Length: 356
Image (cartoon, rainbow, N blue to C red; front, side, top):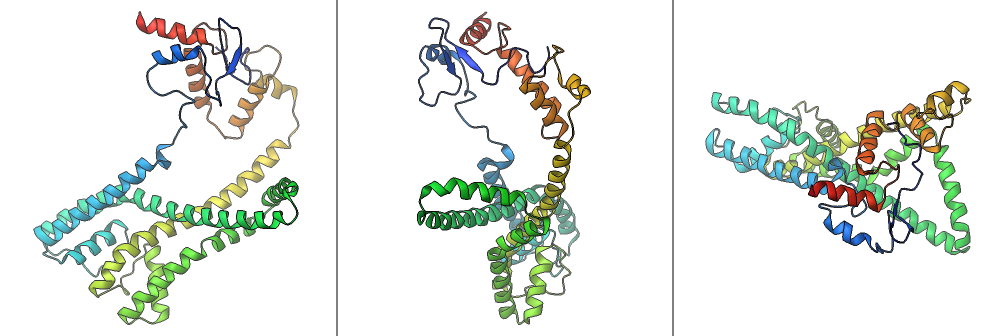
């Protein structure tokens, strides 16, 4: 019951009992031979049949957020335009967005006690639920911009390499990777900010358009952009015309989501830089006999590659030991015959147990 199992190798194989041939679990050519009969009895998707997708990064969560925003805005319009305050649809949309984004200009507020009571719950639900939507919106914008920059760089590199032939491609890529590792903290922050310039420019242009319609000067327009995107929302500068309020319904959540993602990544760059320094210092330590004794999880006197990996990943806080223990339990459950490897016979034994 130790992890990793003393007989576990770096490549998990499924052994054909009849032919005695080892076939990798991941079969790129799709030739599964006699395993098809066993697989046909298994229910659900296989490990290799589909890639694991984190729910936090899935399209399903994105759709849920979009639906949540639509429902929230509909409830806001119906409540403030029909039930309580009799506002216009634009004012109700505008107030709903200003509320859940926490900008809170204060130019439009509920007046009746019933509307105020409703707003208490309306705001709490909006901040709790739609805060996730704003974060995802900002992440999508940032990822799209980064992907565009990446494609442009790859195209430029390809055109450059074509002048000298493809043999230089790997050399250039390796040099680029080494250069990336040597970048200073300030250089990484500078590149992050430069990469966001197109989106920042669009935000500023939109605020200038709003300022032109509302009669603001350039400083006030830029001031409105920053105060809104950071959700400070002093309330001294805000749109008053219906057309600009409608534009603000789109501008506010997009700018708030983008700014939140940008500030989060700025903090992330600093933390990653410090973490990289800590890992570098950790890996430069000298290996001692005491270290080997701790790494030897199964007490056989030897430290296997998997034991070394497990120790280092846990020590560097790349993975949690509880996660490794959970994976060990899954493996032991799949290893029906206790051989230490996953084979066709394990699946057959598992199917037989289910039938019994």
